[in-house]
Length: 127
Image (cartoon, rainbow, N blue to C red):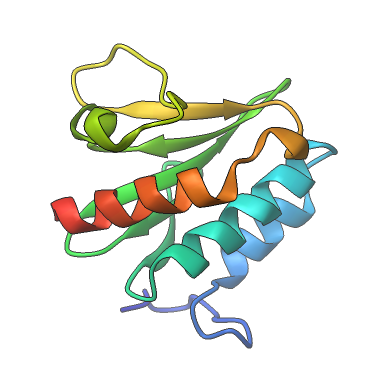
């Protein structure tokens, strides 16, 4: 489940590398990333946290979602987001890539927990 040398924090699902990544972020991205991470874990007990491609990734029988930080915003991305459009009742998903879609968040107040949890759960179910 975890790669050699990866430390797991007390939660047993959170890895140290992601803890460190979030700690080093500036506000408001730090608060947004923390909130998204908690939502991801609340949405599915099956998701495994990894740190790949220089960002937190979450998988269950394949890639599910990721947290990507930019200067002015933080995104929650979905690897198979194109397949989630039918359950995106709040029209949160953005992007025109072949399969990936993301939710761009500029401040923590923009996070819609229930709608995001539904998207995460549906993304897990796709795998």
